[in-house]
Image 1 (cartoon, rainbow, N blue to C red):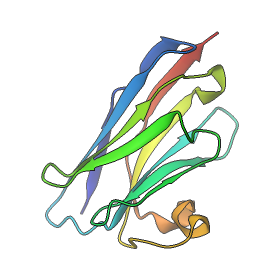
Image 2 (cartoon, rainbow, N blue to C red; image 1 turned 135 degrees about the vertical axis):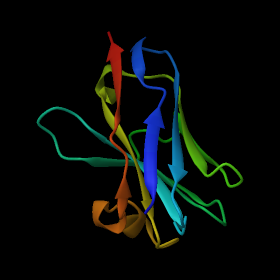
Image 3 (tube, rainbow, N blue to C red; image 1 turned 30 degrees about the vertical axis):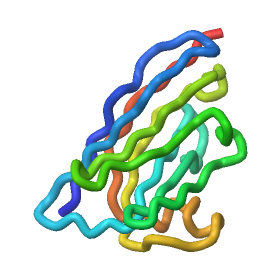
Image 4 (cartoon, rainbow, N blue to C red; image 1 turned 30 degrees about the horizontal axis):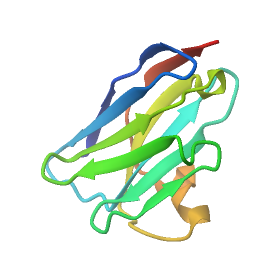
Length: 128
């Protein structure tokens, strides 16, 4: 019964920054990994970043590496995504996800099917 709620989305100009947050709650929080995905209109849901809950190892899509940073706060059961140097192609609905599987190669950590719990999403729009 894990619930995820995203916040922090909005409208920014190209080159600007946003910080997304995801709060996890439930009777039992057993997630070992959390990730961020995004989906543009008419497109499939794509991997953005992930982090191991205990060890803190991070994973990033090539398209955001060097611009986005994922972080965790174990005490608060939250995960954040700092997005810098935003581009119009970053425009999408961003979703937070949680999994009970904690680690693996990039091909595993970036797979939608790995994640059991999903938030409702927050809109990020980057103007030219």
